Length: 77
Image (cartoon, rainbow, N blue to C red; front, side, top):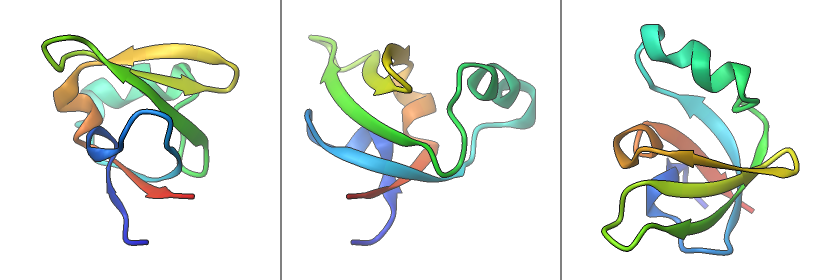
């Protein structure tokens, strides 16, 4: 499958992060939480209004703003 934004996955889908396009000034926070290229993530759910997006990464759940999730490029497994 072709790489696509994390926000376009359906709940329950697992994928590997291939690229992080978040601006440098905000990227550090994501890296500190374990969101790195090569990491497997699973989209858990979207909030009722679609924002934020909840993902499972490295054994814990993490919520990202939809605009951040759109800038995390993944390859579905």
